Image (cartoon, rainbow, N blue to C red; front, side, top):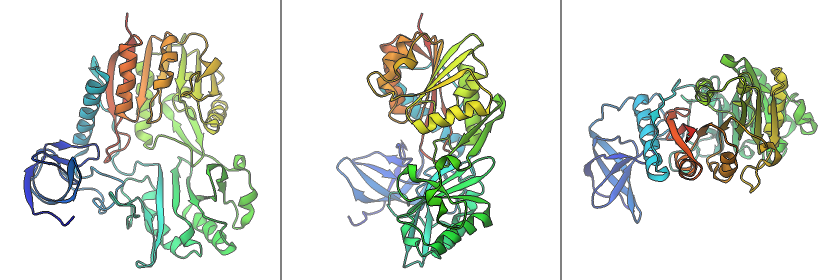
Length: 446
């Protein structure tokens, strides 16, 4: 539609995408606007229930408005809230969590946990970057997608990627532009460990000898481990030498990345494509809070569902008699078992099981558990909750990456399965984004 005439209005709230909400005859969502601001805007796209708007001017700024730390904010879609004070971001996320718990879960916590926060820049140790050769620009663009568009944003650097990734955007762009296969590399997985940084290049086809040598040399020059992915995740291989020997290498022979949880004397190995919590500093606080809220002791038997590579399981093993971890990804379970051996832990058992299946967990869920920790994906854990409730655990800690599915699951735990919501709070795992990570603590009702 042609842009509408300029309008003025006061922003009432933020929506789930971090856009300012203006009420009236027809609601408008305006990126870049903050609650309580008086703004001038125009409508640029119409929908049945709402319009999309464009911010023209902030007439009365919010006290929460700050200068974005990144010059690309507004173009890049990787962040939505850099113009909002980080403390205010956390408050907004806690309000969203509280609203979801009340509306969907019909619950309210007996106490609110202090929000867990950490660094707001240079924090992201895992990401997937797009790569696209653009003939009109004469170069390969590397970065996140543009806001609300499918194009790769033209970035020079990234303020939220962990070092050294944030400063590698321009070198990567220049390097990829010089490859013969520059149009056959659509994405790059990046991962930072405490001992090394890895890049996984998705390649459509087999790179030629000159490109392989160049990729290897780029890794050496920047102190990076280079991996290639010609097909699915199982095809990822380390480019150890500047030739085609990577194609016949075994995945298990590649060096792994590592991170530590020093408060629990645990070191964890992971592949560059494995799921790990993206914010290392916040993850350390998250693990400690989860263990403290579980109130575990040396006599307890604990269940860790959706355990991944042992991020919670192995610290738990340091405190309890026995811990059982269950995860649907066989590769992550293999890493968890390896990590148990790496740390000399022999009271942690790991099992592969689809926890969304009717009998998810199988025999691994046999017996009684004193405590349960849940850390499911965005879909939540609704399918396994009846089996969890039957275990008789006195206390449950639920770590969630989606307030809606958390609230739905808490509704079942509290109104069907006999638990009460003892505490809840937000975790700022993804500063400057609208992603809401949270924790809920449940106690079996007497």
